[in-house]
Amino acid sequence: MTVSDTPLSSRPAWRRLLGTLYVQVLLGMVVGAVIGFTAPDIGVQLKVLGDTFVRLIKMMIGLIVFCTIVSGVGGSKDLKGAGKTGGVALLYFEVLSLVALLAGLAMVHLLKPGVGFGADRAHLDAHAVAAYTTGAKAHDGLVGFLTGMVPDSVVGAFANGEILQVVLISVLFGAVLAQTGERGAAVRDLIESANSVVFGVINLIMRLAPFGAGGAMAYTVGKFGLSALGKLAGLVGTFYAAGALFVLIALGLIMATTGLSILKLLGYLKAELLITLGASSSDAALPGLMEKMEHLGLSRQHVGLVVPAGYVFNTDGTAIYMSITALFIAQALGIDLTWQQEAQMLAVAMVTSKGAGGVSGAGFIGLLATLAVVPAIPPAGMALVLGVDRFMSEARALVNMIGNAVACVVLGHWLGDLDRSRAARVLAGDEDLRFVAGGNRE
Image: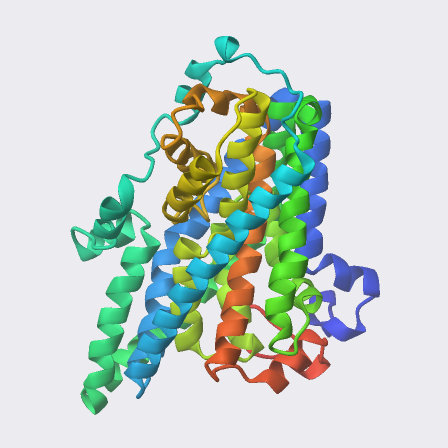
């Protein structure tokens, strides 16, 4: 028997551990951090590894969402149930966004990280902000946001990687396919087969995750260094603390309504969390998250509707970031905001925080648009946080991804779509229900 023929369970523990994706990603991040710290110039050049990995994942996301939703909705006999799921999910997303915004607001008022910073608006570098946002567009209001839901063409939605537009197309295709009955059986079978092939391609791409995460980490440390983190440690610490408390308390309590543990869910998603952390983008973990949610005991239709929509509408980490950073800038510049001004910012952030969940740096663009409603805060004030935005981008992506995982499980439980006994066994590490990428069981 050759080494490759040796059953996984009979291999040494250290080899089994090294063979797991999350350990490989963790090692890649450590190596990347060391390279970025010891050889910053090389670390910056390794950004191409992280960017290439994320682009490889993104090129498949449209197909994943389309195949998952069409096969789920198309094979369903309960289209009203699918509509109910979408409606309840959107309501849930809006409520959680408001909770996240208020949590960030409360934390920054409590810790006051910007008080005493002593920033002088006369010395703010507005050009640096302009350079950082070059090529990116802020949300152009609620009307523009809603208009953007409808693509100019079917192909354009996939070509531009617009998740919400792909969701709309997929739901329409799936709804019509469900009504065709036996006449659409061949098409449903074709999409089911395509779904398996797409996830097979994703599993091949995921082998590059350690290199992608390592390259992204090398860039972050090499480009900004630990000194940038130290200068604004109060802001970063406040944001990380707020994110951790939101996950453990707010999301933990919501998760508790299902009888399942938030900590066990985080353990189950450890590989996806590390990939998100390394790539600074929750998009990189989307395929794995959808596959694991289905393996947990949720229907394909439910996962296909809730997770992609959550990536657009359920951006808890971005919401926390916006409220904390906006108030930090005001505190750092010695600007006292009225409660009416803060309420205005929160109302606008409910819109501008959407659609920025999976893209590194998109939260910065949304915040710039949010500050526009408070003339007292100069847009150039964003220059104060440029040096640490990348560090906060990683935490934004993490909280966004965790929030979507919890939403998928909780909404599934509330709507009667979750096989709770299976979920409990999977989260408990049942050997008969171990997750295997590209398959159901090991």
